[in-house]
Length: 64
Image (cartoon, rainbow, N blue to C red):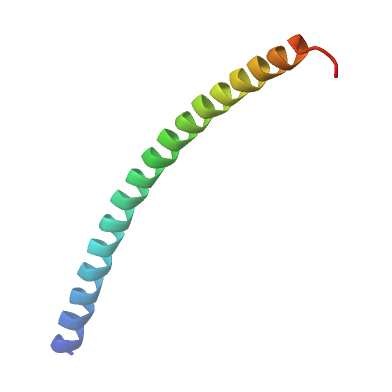
């Protein structure tokens, strides 16, 4: 009985450790997602600017 309780205690401690590691990983991943979202918004803005400039240049070209 004591060995079963010790084994159960070890498994619970292992699960707690795993939970803590996964929780820390999750926090890191949430931060990375936020960073990538911000980068994505910046790239979308740059792309829109490039498209607008290209369209302006195309409008200046004479009709062929």
